[in-house]
Amino acid sequence: ETGVTQTPRHLVMGMTNKKSLKCEQHLGHNAMYWYKQSAKKPLELMFVYSLEERVENNSVPSRFSPECPNSSHLFLHLHTLQPEDSALYLCASSQDRGWGQPQHFGDGTRLSIL
Amino acid sequence: EDQVTQSPEALRLQEGESSSLNCSYTVSGLRGLFWYRQDPGKGPEFLFTLYSAGEEKEKERLKATLTKKESFLHITAPKPEDSATYLCAVQGRGNTPLVFGKGTRLSVIA
Image (cartoon, rainbow over all chains, first blue to last red; front, side, top):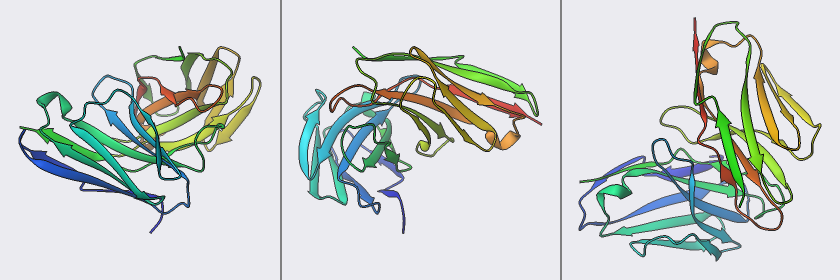
């Protein structure tokens, strides 16, 4: 398998549920990212991991909790979400953080909060 | 603060009708300008990286150019399969994150 794989592709959850999004990259990259994509808004960076260390957290609410157990896997743990959290959540990876390296994206998880 | 503005917001072309998409940017020390294509229900697909003014990259019917203030994505004789949203992003000096524009939604009609 190649590229960046995200599961599940679709997720519907209530505001009191706990769920996790999974991302796996097969590109040998050292940096991984979580983005939120909402209609008519630019991609919003949520978290950055470089060599398994979280290096950026863009004022994301604590109901989103990332985890990076190794350089190939990234998780986003969700709990007590709000309706405004409904969006497409994208994972990306790049060879290194910064230095003009392109990021490669997965196909995302479409999240709907009831 | 780094900023990216894409225009037009939406563009409708007849098959074979060439046109250009614009990406205007402000950034402190450009590390790279990136073009992506995004199809409905999919993640962005990387197309090009441009690093310095005057640089050009080509891929099939697409050609990206860069000046100190903007980038253009030229589409020559487009086909219906070129219909997608095209995203532009910039990265400034250091380890600053990518800043994305809102995209241009392109529709090519047969």
